Amino acid sequence: MKRFAGLSALAALLVLGGGNAGAVETKPIKVGAALDFTKVYTFLTAEYSQGQRDYIAYLNGRGGIKGVPVEIEVADTGNEPQRGIEAYERFKNGGAVLMDFLSTPVSRAVVPRALQDGMNVITAFHGRSDAADGTVFPTIFPMSPAYWSQATAIVKYIADKEGGNLKGKKIELVHIDSPFGKEPIPVFQALAEKLGYSFTEVGYPSPGNEQSAQWSQVRRDKPDWVVLWGAGGGQPNSLREALANGISPDKIVSVIWLSETDMGIVGADQAKGVARFEGVAFGKRPLIAAIEAEVVSKGKGAGDPKKVGGSYYNIGVATMALFAEGARIAIEKEGAPLTPAKLKKGLESIKNFTADGLMPAVTITPEDHQGGGQGRIATWDGTEWKPDTGWFAAYQDVVWDLVKKTSAEFKTAGK
Image (cartoon, rainbow, N blue to C red; front, side):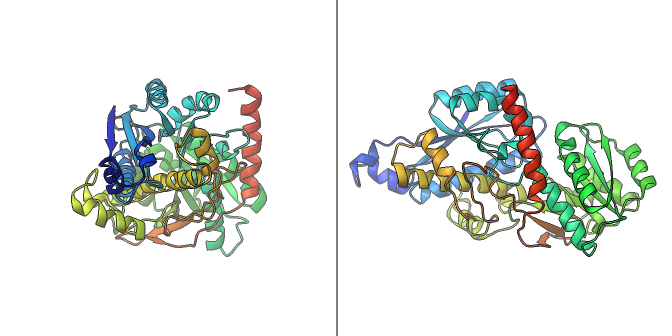
C-alpha cells in the first residue's frame, strides 16, 4: 500500500509549537483509495487518482479541513473484489473515515460490510445505482448522477434535439455485455413506453476489441440515434465503428466514459459533433486552476501536469472536494476528531455545492445520496468538450421508481 500525505503550513506551525495546542493532538483525517491501476480501469485510474491526490495536497496547503490535515492512502486492487475487501479492512483498521474503490465489482463486494461497519464509501460514477437510496444504503455515497440518471439525461437531450417529440424515432443502445453495460436498458425501455420511441440494443463481448458483427446489426437497424455504453478501449472502437458504418457524429451520444484521449484515438476532427454525458466540467475551472498554481506548478503534483483539467482528473478532484465539504460541515457541527458517523452526517448536510463551478449544484440528504442527479451534455468540437446544455436532471420519477424497487429487493435479501 502506498501512502500519500502532506501537512499544511498551518499544521506544521502547530507541530513546531505555535497555534492552538489542542490542534497539535488532532490526528490526520484518513481516506482510503483502493483503485484498479493494473487491469480493467487503467484507462482512467491514474488520472483520477492524480486529481484526488493533487486536491488533497491543495487542501493541506491551505490549512487542511478546519486546521486538520488529510492523509490519503492508495492501494491497487487489480479490479479483484477480494483484494478490495483486504484493502477495506486495512483502511478501516488504520482509522479511515471514508473509502473509494472506483470499481463496480469491488464496491459491490465491499458494500455489505461497509453497511455493517458504518463505513462511508464513495461510489461516484460507478457501483450500484440504487445506492442513491440513503434509507437503505446509509453509508454509501454516489454523490453523482447514477447510470440511470445519465440514461434519462441522454434521452431528454435526444428529445430536445428532435423538437420535443420522439414518436416514431429509433434509439439503439450499443453496450458492453456486462452488468454495467446492461444497467441502463430498463430506463431506455421505460422511457420508450412513456415517450413513444422504438428501442433496440446490442451488446458486444468484453473488452470490446471486436465489434464488427454488432455494428453490422446497427447498420441494418438504421437507428435515428445511437447511444454508446462502454468504457476503456471499447469506447473508441465503438465510435470508430459507428462512423465507419455511416452514423453521423451528431447522432451519437455516450455515457460519461468517453474522454479527449478517446477522441484522439478515433481522430479529433473526424469525431467532431459526438456528444457525451458530463457530471463534472472539463477543463481548468477556477478550482482546477488554483490546484495547478498552488500544487502542480510548484512540482508537488502527483502525476503528469498535462493531465490537469482532463476529464478524469477533474472527476477525481470533484470526489475529494465533496468529501472535504462534508468533513468541514461535520467538524463545524460536532468538532474534531472526525469519525465515520460524524462524516456521514456532514455529507448528508451538503447543500448546493458546486466546488466553484466544477460540478452541478449537489445537495445530499439522508434520503437522497445521489445528490439530485444533475449533469449535462457536452459535444466534441474537434479540440475539446464544449457544453451543449446547462446542468439538468431528467425523468427522475423513472429513476426513483427503479431505485426504490431494487433497493427494496436488496433490503429484503439482506445482502
